[in-house]
Image (cartoon, rainbow, N blue to C red; front, side, top):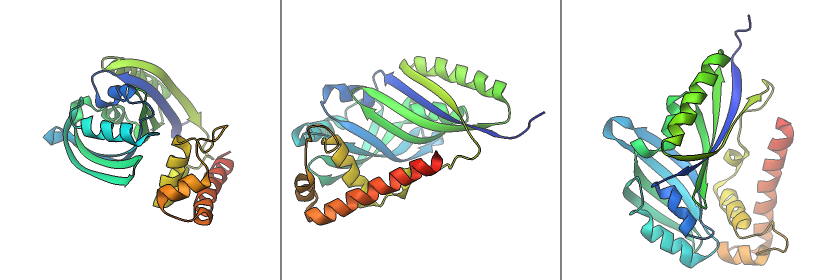
Length: 230
């Protein structure tokens, strides 16, 4: 009998009704990414840090102003402006309405969460020696998530033991991460381009050459991590 621990990667997309994430559909181009979270279950709230990005500064500002009035938000602790299209928001959320804690309660380790166009997605890892128990737990999780909204995607994939459990985003410096997010959301990698190096350099108040170095370093780290995992 094989008693070795098996690893699984879990990915889910949910329309979480009445949650703050659901209302991002009212703000064209708004996208958020999880930076940090910590549950204070006994106090009924979760400490959350997210990055908010957008394609238009006026829409980002409108979303930031409305954020504290949206669903499952108890209080906004602070708002830090990175530039006109990127903000960092620290807030307290109602722990009963935070879907990541459903995943945690079923044994998952949430490593990333993104929100955009009214859809919230999570990536998590599960580790188990008993596949049947994991299947039962995931079935219960699916049903519970449906109580909060509509589950759009629900995937679990086996991860070989040779895989490297690192996310390339954690290998980026803060400036590399912020530049890569801005480049992606403003269409630098699109065809035709939404912005060029000069646009990004002005936004971050650095030279075009420095912007190119940061962007190349960020992409090199991600590609290297991907090839090593393959």
